Image 1 (spheres, rainbow, N blue to C red):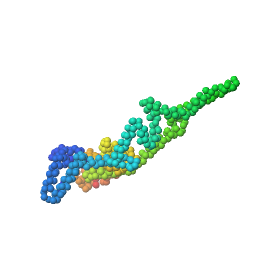
Image 2 (image 1 turned 45 degrees about the vertical axis):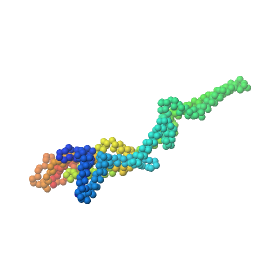
Image 3 (image 1 turned 180 degrees about the vertical axis):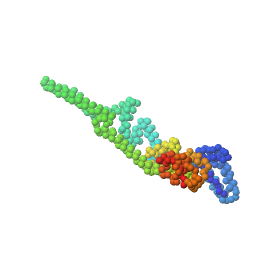
Image 4 (image 1 turned 60 degrees about the vertical axis):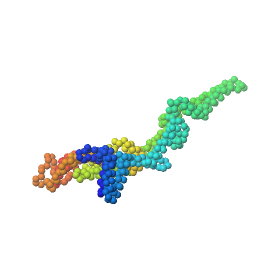
Length: 441
């Protein structure tokens, strides 16, 4: 005995028999009467399988047991995920799309990537606690790779501490300030100035010599005070240059402050171009190929009746792909993940394709039905036209409409923007030179 297999597609529109309510939107919105994995349906199915096992036919009993096992597994799956296998595939694609680069193990995917991310978050939380507590071990946890960045942040950190806690600012800056002054020219010249002022003229000098000695001491004081002033002015000039890099004449400071940033900008632009090339070469063509294949699969039931020519079919395919992408973009989780992929330098093509295909297929059937109904519903629901005579160009053929020119071959310069679907089925076309023609063999 053959057991009928019932398939449910999340994109199909299911019509209940005997005038029941029309249900859209897939498995998640089916009533209990329609759901083959509801408690009631499962009990009825189990009773039917039991009747097969008790029928006395060994083959029926064997396959009834297999069917019961399969139904039990699907029932358990539906309890775990309401959308069934499609829902599991979607969640697995999302899980597999998680990527993390580990310095030791390389690029990780899926569950391994999530575990590594959890470890990273835990380590970051520990560092945050150390920073909040003011523990110097936080700097050890950051490692030597952060030295350059910390050096750039030091002025901003000091400004913030100065505004929030002046005493802590003084405690942090004053020891370094005193140490720097101790070995500076300012202090050495000041000490020399004090020594000069404390000197007394020798007793053995004559009055004229004492005058000359006093003048010499005065010149020493002026020179030492001048050195102190020059040092202070030089420090002020250096501070101004460091505060506004590129405006002073210190080319070394300017190059240090702006050269590296320019290099970083160029590197970022190069990485972006490389990422775009990777996406356009290894990912986008395969996505387009999948969209084309899915269009052909879903359009197949309508293709024979509509009998569209190549340009019209291609235009329909482009609109189909566009609408599926727009529908998928309304899902924040999908757009967020795609944004992360686009931000990566070299995302794994197979992972991106798997994730995107699941979301594309999720909306493809609904979009196709909507698009076909929108454009061709009057024709598809109307009565098929009788076949035209083999030749209507001879005697007895109906006269052409006003302004319509009769031709025997389909023109090559058809203006598809002006030509409607009804005109195409009537074998009437607008041409790019403004004529309206009708093909009659």
